[in-house]
Image: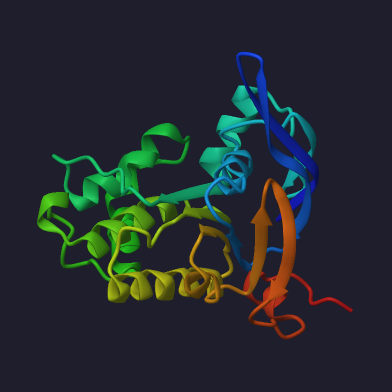
Length: 242
């Protein structure tokens, strides 16, 4: 699903150039749950912006679902974001005056998918995250964990193969955070790929693999939950590896 090779990114402020990513290389297979872990300033968020096609690398290659988006134009990047990627952030980014149902349908405004059954799709997405009884509630009437579930349902509405989550449990208490991680595991078990940015080792340990970052470099690739041969293929419908 993700193939990153020698990815580099710098930012310039006046005469000062800061290298944020320094030749990063890794792969994420379809149907895999990967945590990217590291302290503040390690390059995690910059990497997520590149993976989400919100920014471009200075050099290196980024293949998403087999297609090179390293230097793709804005139109191609926007189309791929709408079709292939769902985002979940630490801040829920919900519209205060819109119901949970309305918040979930918003991404349909930016796609070419038929919006006619958008309400039914949003209801199914909310049901999948355990909020079928909260469809008409405003964000202010929901707990933090429930607001994050709405955000996850919104990320799922266009049925993207890839979910990118940035510190998605950072604003939640331990119980609500664990519930969100359980939902993420179900999403992966259904065949989607999920990349989670976190600074919390205990959160990262819920993933299949942990990619550790520091000072713009990948420092380690640790397998947490080995997948049985063919497990990912079974989830995605692909042929198992020989």
